[in-house]
Amino acid sequence: YLNQTRQMHLLKSKAYIDSKWVSARSNAVFPVLNPADDSVITEVPDMEAADAKLAIEVAFDTFKSWKEVTAKERSKILRRWFDICEQNSDYLAEIITAESGKPLAEAKGEVAYGNSFLDWFADCARHINGEVVPSPWPNKQIILTRQPLGVVSIITPWNFPFAMITRKVGALMAAGCTCVIKPSEDTPLSALAAVELAEKAGVPKGVINVVTTSRKNAPAVGSVMCEDDNVQCISFTGSTAVGKILYGQAAKGVKRVSLELGGNAPFIVFPSADLEHTLNQAMLAKFRNNGQACIGANRFLVHEDVYDKFVTGFKELIAKKCILGPGTQEGVTCGPLINIEQAKKVSGLVENAISNGARPLIGGEFATDLGNKFYKSTLLVDVKPEMKIFNEEIFGPVVQVLKIKSEEEALAIANNTRTGLAAYVFTKDLGQAFRMSRKLDFGMVGINDGIISGAEAAFGGIKESGIGREGSLHGALEYTDIKYTLMSGL
Ligand code: ADP
Image (cartoon, rainbow, N blue to C red; front, top):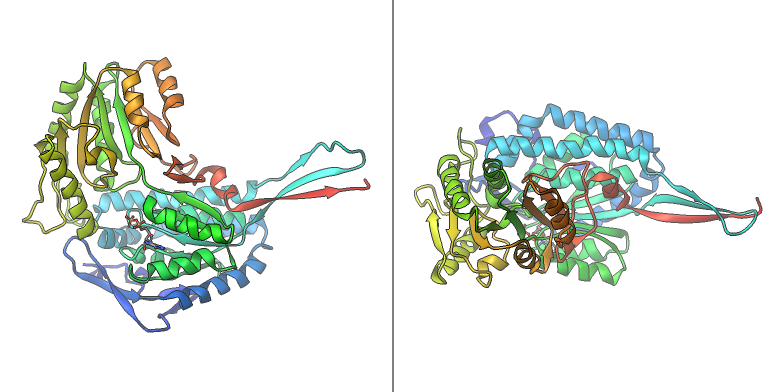
């Protein structure tokens, strides 16, 4: 599919170090597959620790000059990168769909979202201000300035293969840092396309480097990226399990970390909510990227007064709007799951729930005529909080609904998890809305809204969902340290 289309100039089959398209030292490669039909899109270098070390050295050397570039100039470069990504939106979307499987319309949405971080951080670059603090001593001045951390190691997942790059790289470039990126083995092509456009936009040599590697080599490459003395920060988005490994490795060198890990988002519906609006938002919060989003609604907690109507309405919407198929096909709204492991995980969770008494009102099986990764959009009722599915991030197109009787019960169930990324609340009661927002142990709360992420907002979780924030000015400040200078003898 890709080979016949017009984005060949963005389809790269090499890694990118010091502005050069390079192979692995070993010359090894691994295939990048289209999840819709398992066809090989292309092969990319299967790099090892030594390759990563070289990329880090380049980023470290480049940092010495890049940190001296003025904020105004960095801003201009980011803006040019934004412009050129905008011009290439359709091509980028086609690459995203080819390697991640998401429907083309969603891939275009991801490009717009990803680009918005470049636009935003181009603005932020010029607002990373310091402070002058009143001194307790005469004739002295306390000056606090923000300095870039240095080299940032970036490790990204496959579900938003383009936006996760711009969200991190836009922020760290605004701050004056350089980086080495290890994209997911499932989706390295979007990252490579993004850096091709970065080069065209005039991002200087060595500021952004990309090391591609298979899952087999990821642990060895990851260790170097976390432990090399020339790295100052590890920015990771992915599973909590891998996040904990990287956090441990970063601790050895007291490195900064920015971790965006898993969630288990509650979606709470109270009787006063506008039901039609709530259902439409529920569709978005659940089925975006076919359920493969860390802020995707995972547990629907619905008040008994509206439970029946909610469940009936949700089933109807799923039947009408969830059209399963390859992401390139017109009209398709739900693509394949990313790989066979994820497909097995999702179906396993549903089977386990059913064997423990849950009932699927729709779905609950693979659409085997389409292949082994197309799971039907599913709605489960009679779910119990002790079931495995209720306590894990499903990361697939499965709705589970639990009946609740009160605000207190909703809060107790919602907060009973070690993760704390996003939560959603639907109510017209203003007091209840504020109360829920305050009492929910989550980093982000959407009130009457199922789509909360944006470049201007601070994205991030608490508890085991992570450390730090992305987007907003805070996202750029993550990549800075505060330098304190005491000016004496004034
Ligand atoms: P997902 O379920 O989204 O694939 P993972 O946490 O498994 O989440 O993967 C996210 C990223 O982490 C990918 O780029 C993957 O290659 C990388 N990764 C997985 N294991 C390790 C590891 N031990 N060290 C470094 N990176 C790893």
